[in-house]
Length: 268
Image (cartoon, rainbow, N blue to C red; front, side, top):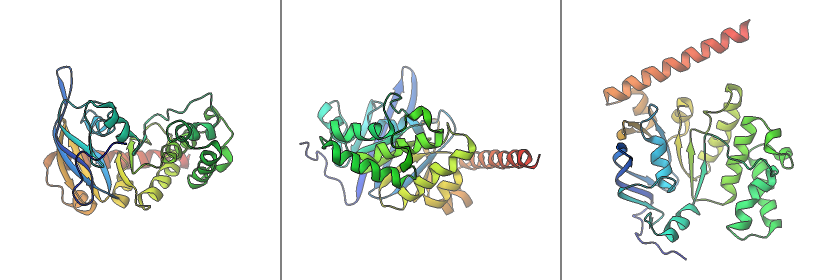
C-alpha cells in the first residue's frame, strides 16, 4: 500500500510544477505548471506539436518528465515503480487509437484489467463490464470482437475498459481524431455523460463545441508552454493571448469549412 507522499491541498488531485520534458534536443514541455481539482473537467487544446499529448502522458508516466514535479492524488511520480503503479491504478486513459486486443471479445477486453490488476472474481468483473457497456450504449456488442465493430463503437469499448478499473481520473488523448465524422457524436455523447458524473477529466481535443459545453477550464498549449487558461466563456470571447486568438480563428474557420463541405455532400 502506497501512502500519500504529498498530501493534497484541499480538493487538488493533480499538481504539476515546472514540468519539463525533452526528446533528445527537443524540449516538448518547457516548464508547465497546472493544478487540477477533484471533479474538474479540463480541456487542453493547441496546435500539433504543442506538447498537449506529451503533458497528459506524463501525468500517467507514459512519458517520463526530466524536471519538475507531478503529484497525482497525493503521490509524486518518481522513478519508484511502486509510486508509478499506484498512480496508474487511479487513472484511466483513452487514446487516439483504440488499443483493444483484437483476439479478445469486447467483454474480455473490459474484464482483463479488473481480473488481473484489481484481483476481482470473473463474475464481478463481467457484471461491471455489462453495466459499463449499457452506460456507453452498446450492450449488444459484448460478445463480438473489436474488428466487428465500427470505430465509434470501439472507442466506446475503450472508454468502458478504462472505467472498469474505477479510476479517480480519466485522461483522453484526442479520442475522436481517428473517427469518421458520423461516429464522433456518439463518442462525445458518452464523454458528456462522464463530464456530468463528477469524475475528474482531462481531455486533449479540437472539438470546441464539446469544450465550450462541458469544460470547467480550457487550457491552450503552444510550443511546449501553457499559454492561456480560462473558463469557456472567457476563453472563446475574450482570449488574452494573440496566439490563442489566432488558433481559435483558424480552428473555427476549419470547422466552418468542414460543415459546409458535409452540407454540399448531403445536398448532392
